[in-house]
Image 1 (tube, rainbow, N blue to C red):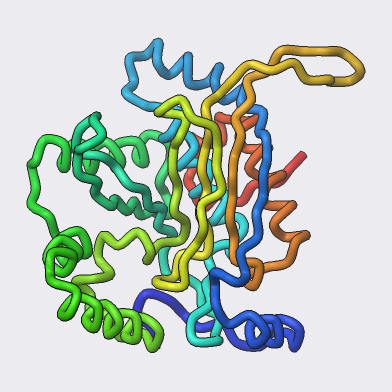
Image 2 (cartoon, rainbow, N blue to C red):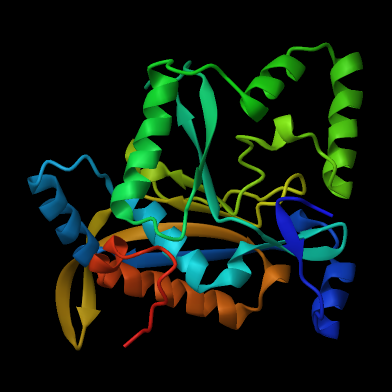
Length: 281
């Protein structure tokens, strides 16, 4: 019994056998490299900026992903101890530096996407959390604090403690203090590499925790693309996505990527409730 998720029963025989053949998440890693057209999204964000709204492209990406997960619920699943579960909530996580320099400490940040959230409310959630750690308005808590304590212990003590935590994680009895603010206990881990002028990369998912995916977003660049036989300059962003192939089939993943592109092409959707069903026209 896992208090943060519900177990999914009545799996097909193929789905269960796949889990048995590949019981570890890191052995079930699939890679998706996708260049997404974000031209319309960039236009939308420019209009937002004219209204002096403190909303970034990363906030828009987070909102789009939240809507995607509500519309494609299989993405919000994970495998643990050879059983498949679905998260009770949609939570997107990322790592933020407390200051913009190489030596600055990193903190894990989790953002819960509620059913009635939209780009404005999600942007506020992100800004509040990031500003709180950068302005030191709140003390470390949850996993950020636990990791700080355990990580400084000598090997002879730290290694068996970490092993014990891994076993608790496997059987679903990890203490709440280690789950809170732990990015490995989220629906998806994201990294905005475009903010440091870097391209998208593939980043492995781990056996620890229950995050079945990790997505990186590269820098937005202008590229010439062929549309209806004519060359056009478009704003393109590369995504590097790693997913646990056991949570859904390839067709489901492809349809999910197509839906994400549809949201980018129709950015006004970001103003609607996150859980609103999207019908591709």
